[in-house]
Length: 448
Ligand SMILES: *Cc1c(COP(=O)(O)O)cnc(C)c1O
Image 1 (cartoon, protein in one colour):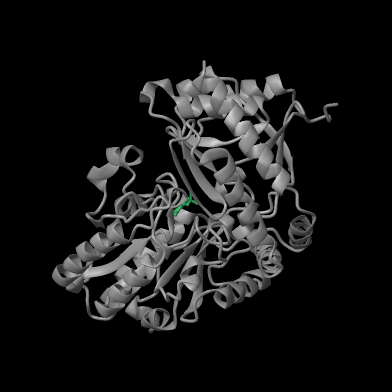
Image 2: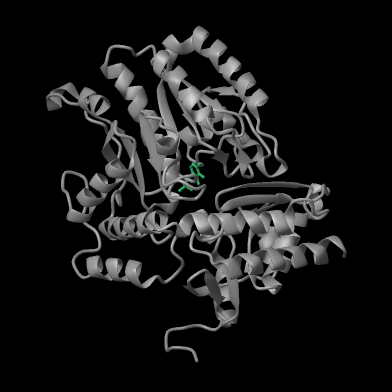
């Protein structure tokens, strides 16, 4: 029954439709379809305000690691809550922030020793870009202003991240107000289809070589998502590409910014892709999985030499002037620290690898070769199942997502790509359920 302060689903829905404006959502469409209000979560499951449950096939927008309502994460959070919910990192410190910073440096490539907190992935990238720009000014190379990025990149929705991104309709309207960036063709491979992608990788590297020969002296940094371009629809990159790019950046004195906002914290396998590839970037951006999907927190890691370039007397104005009110929030830091410990244990025990193996097997069993999904991509616990081509206006992907709800599954489609991004702790039974329900929902929509 309803608690004294709880409203009925109809009441909540009335408030939402009257007052909310949802992100990345055509509100006309949203208002025309039945809306779903998630009231609570337990493990990999979400429960709506009517008590109906759904498997969280989207990891609450790619963030969830250990499931919802995890007792250990809750305890870490409430423990910190009993001390203080928020102070500030602007000139003050707090124990969880310091401990987490040390832990993040501990898991990162050896050269990364400094952590700059913020509260979302876009800001983690903004900070890396601005640090790079300011570094070159402080070291007498203010002509190094350019940025290189990859085609189909997504680094966020703020102006700097829109500039370095290449997300077409997401950002085209704002291109007038963004700075110019050179885009190198992103090499892709269709791993589930067996194409390794060596040729496309060679072509991308040749283009990068040419660009660096011409422009390195005027280039501050190169930014890329390693292994997978999530928001582009889980576009897979050949392994080893990051290492090749890193070598070239080093040789040409161009900073390398690795955006692991999506790929980090086990999503595509390793705790960090850059570490797995043996790459030492100048900047590493972390967010989504950092707090296991609990609270907003992001981190930009960098090196001691870059940190030192910003040191000086106050009157030299070398300090880095960028900060957000909730930067490094203690509650978020406490959860992140506990989540990291749990994730490291899960990886060490082999459970994480076993989950990925089960997921891979399910993709092979239910999706690869199915006429429902002509193209399938997967790496780690991320997959994209592309529907046969339909006119955009038919909104086939959205229809499948809406139908999937009736089958007890939450997914979010990107156009006609069904993206499957479950919590990292999903069980083999839940994986089977996920693909069975997704297949059913797709059959219903395609056969209607
Ligand atoms: C989601 C994402 C971002 C942006 O993070 P927000 O927290 O949504 O601002 C940046 N880079 C990558 C690779 C992402 O997937």
